[in-house]
Structures are given as structure tokens and as C-alpha cells.
Image (cartoon, rainbow, N blue to C red; front, side, top):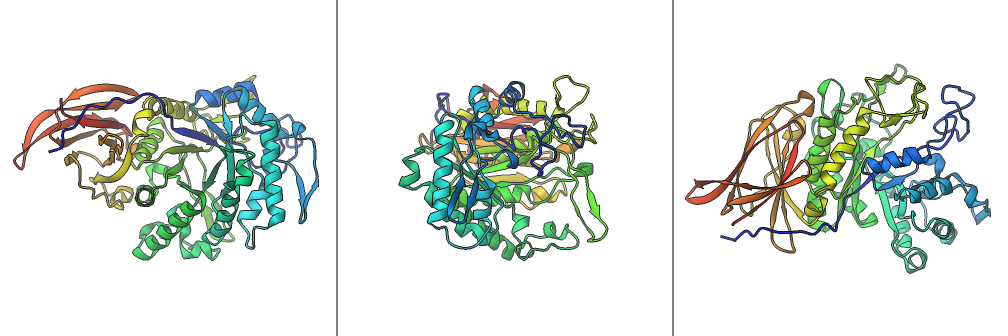
Length: 500
């Protein structure tokens, strides 16, 4: 039996988190690119939120890097043969955004829809003219904003047909030519969740009844998504996706856990990291009577919803987190009880905005995990186990059959998720124990887990470290340490068993 040694880890690593998207500049409408001052005046538009107060709020929420929204991107005009004219970058909205981010210690991943968006969603070669545009983009941003320029937001949800083109762009961004300009340039791209990679999605239409996309994710579709994950990771170097599971009236979107499990398995086998963008907004259902289609209803996340998403993701080894969305900073139909953004406009406030309950929930969970991120970021995901007590398909679609290490048994009175990890540096084993039950119902979960040969665990709970002795029990002739605890709604704890 392997002797489990109590580890000690210096605080030298951090988990990165982003706002997708960052604070808005002044404008009239989302895509219009027209500017104004009064958010209630349709002719005047809304004010800029690129201010000291807002950026400090973003930092205090635990965010480490920002991705500015579309109309704050690098504003240059290009022709097929290259640069048409070069405006003063220091007068551009992106420069003001990045200067403000540097002032408050935040990194920025800028992009340019005219450059990267169009390049990655179209077919054809990635030629010398396009390389010239990319090089000029990197040179300009690096010249004026070297401290806040961390990486590039390459593209959002490209289809499988565009992955080859994405790979060509990433290869150029990683070339000696670009690295000579920006040696530490990072690349971020958000890919599709499993339900969006069905053949129907690629053909440009959806099932009339959207729920059919979620009912059964059969082996053929799993194979398609597996290929998609590997192709994305091969192109970008990681697999990052967004998934918003919190529906109306307590509904959870099936496939959130399955998506995480499939990505984690391929990341483990292919040795690439995974990241996920989580839901931090409310969206109301809108139905089109002409087409018979509508968008899904997302509920306004509570603190329990927020931490359930985070701890569930960490149980699958996610190494970078994003939040969608800090939109919108203004709203003509806003209601205090149902905010649809983390920081919104409120005409009653002199500052022009207020922080919502969602903001406070995200900030609280971020503080919890960033207090212990230097520990769990050392561990590599091996697999997971589950206890499914409810009829919820989110937990039941999970395979969760890991067996290995010192782990022996797992029990829970509610849906339970156990993420299993190992530190390759010292051989320590770590386990994320999560109350996986639908957080809408606010139910506690009495869980227990046994570890062969362990007498204690290092337990990381609510951002604090504590040592817990284990009850010694005999299972199948083997002496095991038994950990029992009551997890509150959405709660997750990270434990490292050891022998004293």
C-alpha cells in the first residue's frame, strides 16, 4: 500500500478568469457603433463604462484578464492588398480600454473582427496579405500597450469546417516572426459545446423542437464531438467552450457534465488544458411566430448556482474560467429582482450603474477558489465518480466510472460528483467532492468517501485549509480512512488524503 505523505505547496500559481465581454465603451446600440451619453435616450445612446470605478470593480470580482466587446476592437480599415490607412491608435477606443486595464492591473485579450473574425469563419488560404495584417495588429498593440497586452481573442465558436483555417492563423501567431514581436503572446478561442456540433448545426438549420438536441447524445454524435475536441486542441493548444446550464423554473440543461467529462478525458489523454465559460446572466425566452423558433430561457443565477458551476468545472480539471456575461451595462427593461448582467445601468444611481447580486455571487466564489488555486492547479485530472439519486439527466448522462488510487467508496444522499486527481510531481492524490444536486432546490448533501491507508485529509473548504482526522474503518479486509461531511447547496471541497 502506497504511503500517503502530507504535502506543502507554495502560493505561486493562480487560476485565470475573464469577463466575456469587458466594460463597454459609449455607444447607441450594441452593433451600431454610434456614440452618445444618455442610455435612456434612443438618439443619445449609452455612456462609456471604461472608467476607474468599473475596472476596479472587475478586478475586485477576481477577474484577471478582459476581452473587450466587438465595437471596442482594433479599428483599422484594410483592403485585399493590405493596410488602406492608419488612424491614430492612441485615439482609438481599444487604446483607452487597455490603458485603463493596465492602470488597474488587468490583462487584455483584444481582437479585431475585421481581421480574425472574418478570417476564421471563411474558407480559403491564409496568405501573405493576411499575415501582414496580423503582424501589423500585434506590432501596434504591443507598441502602445505592452503591459496589458497578454493575448488575442482569436474567434468565437467556429464550425468544424473552419478549424483548419484557425490552425493556420495560430501557427502564424506562434511563429518566430510574431514571437520576436510578442514572445509571451497567448491565444484564446471559445469553441462549441456538444449539442452545437450535430450535423444539423453544420448544415445551418436546427430541429424544430430544440429539446431533441439534448435528449440522446448517441455514440455517433459522441464520435463527432470527440473529433471536434481534438481538432480544436490541435489548432489552438487547448479546448475552451461555453455552456449555460441554468434554465427557468429550476431546469438544468442536460449535457453540461457530459461536455466537461468528454473534454476532460481528451485533455488528459492528449495532454492539453481545458477552459470553460460559465453562465452569469438571465435571458428571457423570445418566440418567433413566423419561424416557430425561439431562444431558451436562462434564469438569473444565485450564489448557489454560481458555485455549483465553478466547483463542478474544477472537478473536471478546468484550468481557466470565463463568465458570460458582464453584459449588459444598460437595459431599458431592467428589473431589480431579475438582473441579466453583473454590472448594469441604473438611472437611480449617480454613478450610472449598480452591481447586481450576480456580481457579488461571482466575486465571493472567486475569492474562495483563488485562495486555494495554487494547490489544485498542481493536480492532473484522472477521472470522476458519481452518485445519481435524482432523475436529472445532467448527472445521469455522466459516465463517472473512475477506479484507482487510494479511493474506495463514495456515498451521498443527493446527486454527488467526485473529481479524482494526482500530482505528477509528488504523487499526492486529490479529490474534488461536489454537491452536484440541482442548486435550484437548495438541498444539502450528506456524503462520505473512504481512502485506503489514509488517516487524515488536507481539506480546502470555502477558501480555507484545515486538517481533518479520518474515521478508521475496515472494508474488504483493508483499513481505510472515512471522511463524512454535509455539503451545502452547490458546495465543493478539495481534499488530499495522507497518512500521519
